[in-house]
Length: 369
Image (tube, rainbow, N blue to C red; front, side, top):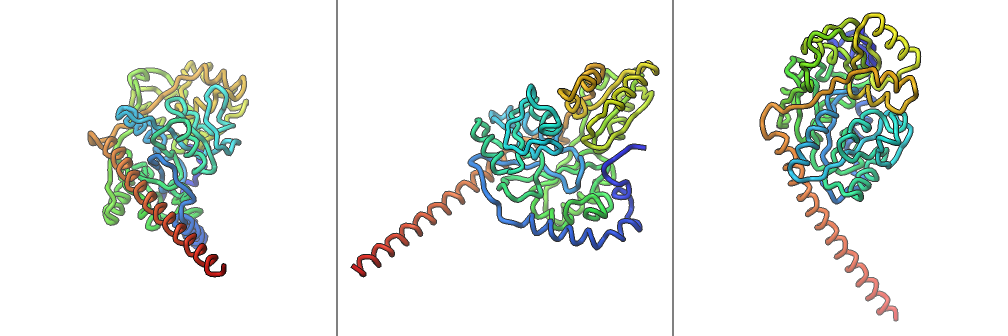
C-alpha cells in the first residue's frame, strides 16, 4: 500500500472519522476563508498568474505552471516562477540556483521549475514577485499561493486532479480541502481538470454553477516508448505515487517492484541502500519522477549515487483544446492592464486629495497669520 501524507479516508466517501472531525473542519475553514478575503498587502508592476489547488497535496500545479511558461515564452514573454519553497529552510526572497541549492534549501518543486525559467522562493509573496520583476521577468507565474491573499493576482487558475477531485468534500482535518469549496470558488478565474476520471465531474458541476470556465488537460509521459518491455523498480515520493506507477505500466514497463514514500520525502541512507540492493538482486532498472530526482541532487554522496543509477520518467501537460494556454496568458495580460489603470486612477485620486489637504493647511496657516 502506498504511503501518503494525506489520510486515505480523505479520498473516500465521508465516514465516521470525517464526521467526528467535522466541527474542527468548520472552524478551520471559516478562519481560512476570512484570511482569503483579506485585502492584498501589495502588488507588482507585472502580470501575476496564480496556479493553485483547492486541496492540500499535489494536483498538477507544477506541470501546469511549466506548460504555461513554455507558452508565454513562445508568445515573446519572459516569465518567472514564484514559489513558497515548501520543505526548504530558506524563507527568501531568493533566486533558486540549481548549482548552489538543494531541496533542503529551497524545496523540490522550485528546483524543478528553476531548470527552465528564473525561479524565486519567498515566504513573502510580494517581496518574491518584486524580485522576479527586478531580474527582468515580465510575467510572474505562482506555483502555489491561491489561498494566500498577500499578493494581488491578475488571474487564478485552479488545477484539479480528476482521480482525486476534492476528496470527501470536507476541509482539513476531516478532508483534503484547504477551505470550503464554496468559499474558494469565488476567487478562481477558471478551473483546469487534469485527466478524465470521474472524481473531477463534481468539480465541473460546482464550477459551472458558479459561472467559472472549465478547461481540460492531460499529463503525458515524455518518450513513453523507452519503458516498453523493461523490468523496473519504480520508487517515488509524490502526492499520488500510484498514478506514476500506473503510467509506467501503461507505457509497457514491467514493474518488478514499487516503493512509495510520502510527498516531498527526504530519502534516508538506509532507504537508498535498500533501493540499490533490491534493484541489483532483481536485475531491474531504477526509475523515478523528475521531482524525486531533483530531491536527490546535492543531498549527499548516497543520494547522488541513487540519482546516477536512476532513470527519470518525465511528464508534460497537454491542453485538450488548442489555444487554451494562449487564452489564459492573454486574459492574464488583459486583467493586468485593467489593474494598472485602476491603480493609476487610485494613485491620481490620492495625489489630488493630498494636494487639497495641503492647500487647506496653507489657508489655515495664512488665516492664523
